[in-house]
Image 1 (cartoon, each protein chain N blue to C red):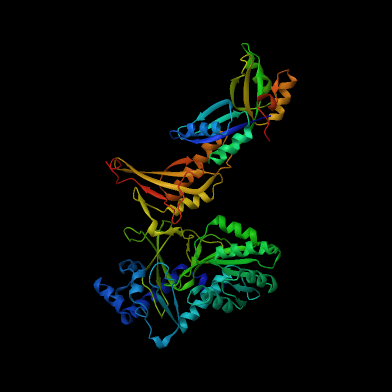
Image 2 (image 1 turned 180 degrees about the vertical axis):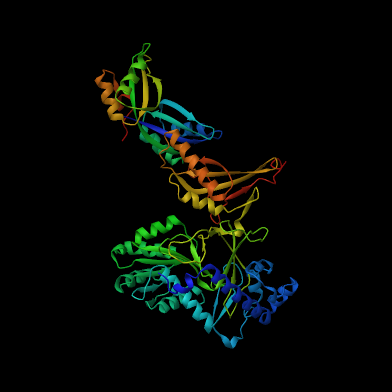
Length: 438
Length: 144
């Protein structure tokens, strides 16, 4: 189900024409109103009027998180403060917070896009939506709230926290749609069980989950525990907040990017050149309609790829795959970009191995060699060598297919890979160690 | 039915010694011990005098270990003895996954351990053919 079917299922050529027109207007807007963009464009010798096709985007300079930080709080706004009706900010967990501003029209657009999200998840005006994303400076709560209201659903602004009360409301208000982070959905399910409430018996049928990375197996766990269909949603405050991209409930395979409002590029994080659809790289967005704080080629640091082919739901917007990880974790192996989280994703799907692994990089002559150490689970029935060899073969084949580079796999004993308190040490790079290099 | 311990061993020096030390410290004796290996890893198969004690000790020491049901068959000590046993199993449609042999402390009887898909059918067929299948208490102390 689509909230704006005439837009969400636009023919590609009409969509691309619309994108080009909107891109032109956006470039003109930022050049005229944001000193940082004017300086960047001038330095790159880029004339906003010279844009002739969408491919010309590759000539534009990138925008990074630091640009927004240094413009704190209002330096990147492209509209006068009198036209700004709302600000939000990023959490600032990795540094100084960044502030984003919305004009009245931006809020309208955002409401439409989040209404699309709820509709794509299968929600209708008949639904009762419990919004458990945090309300406040974080974009999650209000973003979901406006979208749910725009759709016409009954909207309950619970915000986060007080899990027992969440369960109470879920039970008493006849909630049919839950919007929160996936990990919180899991906690709600567990808390309900402790309280003797079987959520599967309740009218709840849809989950709209995002704002943190989660895996396919976690989705299945949550769907089973709560008796619902769960969709993944994607967004970031620098680009909009939630509502940038959404899975459709029909396929639950890849997130449709609202391409009439955002130009999607996947670039090689190393060369920064756009890669063809299907190849993995860093997700880059250019906003096409934002007035408050448009961003040009914003590097999200999120890693994904475009899923090629048409989607059964009828939307023509391209889909990006569930985010694999962050560029900060990337390795380059034999010229191929490898993200350790891709390995984790593969391991999660294979019974008999634990998602604990270590990647050991060495160099044999001029060639990088990768060995992935994978723990077997303590309960794997490994008595027959055949079963172990089959497991070994499967792990190797599935990692190779996910990474597009062949790797050696070593099955190791349970709990033999060192656990660490903080961030796990997933990669041991011996390529530049004496004796490793030729 | 005999309970055999199967221990997953990563191919690295000292790992098997560590396993043997753990069993020794737990006061477990081995009646039979055999290692199947590949380039990447090995599986040690053990008939212990107290299988559950051995299982607990190895688990506590962080080994990946499982109990596997096998059958222990007394093999006639003469040429063609093993062939007879295998003929019976083959005739009953029982496929042998692997087998190994140990000798009783008195040294007079050879016992063959067979891992088969269907131990019950195998046992029935062997007993019907007059071949002695050893009960567990004959081989080790039943400790659970």
